[in-house]
Length: 203
Image 1 (cartoon, rainbow, N blue to C red):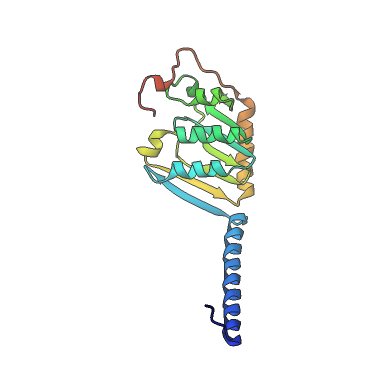
Image 2 (image 1 turned 45 degrees about the vertical axis):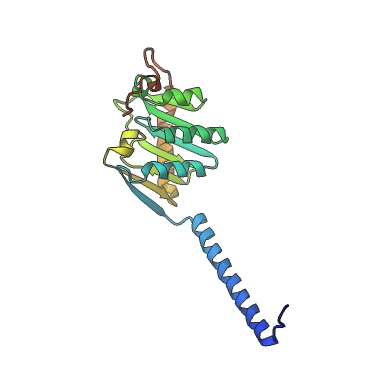
């Protein structure tokens, strides 16, 4: 059995529904505007176990066209396979590593090469000690945080994720290409073995 609504009640239901719908639209607009905003934004993380690694993984998943990486060491599988997955999605992934990765049995360099990721080695410096990821020319990830298991779980490190600063990010991007252009294709040096065959702890 249905009860008829008087005109006044019906009018207030329509008003309430309209107001609720408008508030919903305003809320969604604010979320979308925040996501698309070019306003500067800096996210700050600290390790150990402060969310650094997960924050990087989420940024890699959100990449649309390009990921540029400079790193001293690379042993953190979530980041390694995040980059492999990005490459398999059609993202242009380029990596420049320190020369120690060609000799270090703990390095994930072999995983990158086995999956066709473009990796070059910077031999021109005593140590290529950058820890930088640049995503889609709009997001810069940097800080002391190495892309390693130890940095995530044991070390005291810091990580910055910077957005909405195109001039700053472009300077980092220019620097990346400066080093990439004198780096050489990565080669696994003789005697280096897959760390998974040894069960030893990665640095």
